[in-house]
Image 1 (tube, one colour):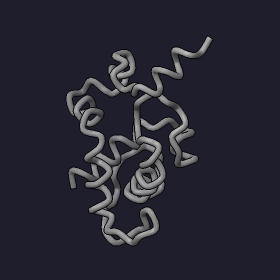
Image 2: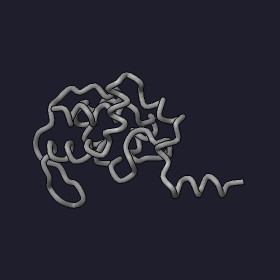
Image 3: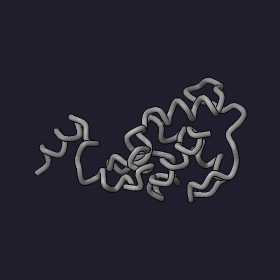
Length: 119
């Protein structure tokens, strides 16, 4: 149940456009990573019964397709949520993930290099 709530919490911080297109577009360090965006959004949309607000309305059960394989939705929630402990800590502490945007710790080395090379 905690992993399911975690997916919904991360989903709430996706931008409206990212929720709609099921991809990570903004490199803001908030919400799902690119490799989890589609699966995370689909899980969250299923749990929220198709609403974009991120409020869980149904429990996860059954199977879904992930990377071409049939997997249990509960397992997939646990698998994805495990990668977002830092964001979830900010959310749980009531700080919100916006505090994280100003710290710069979400940027990886490649993104730093891209930003430094821009005029």
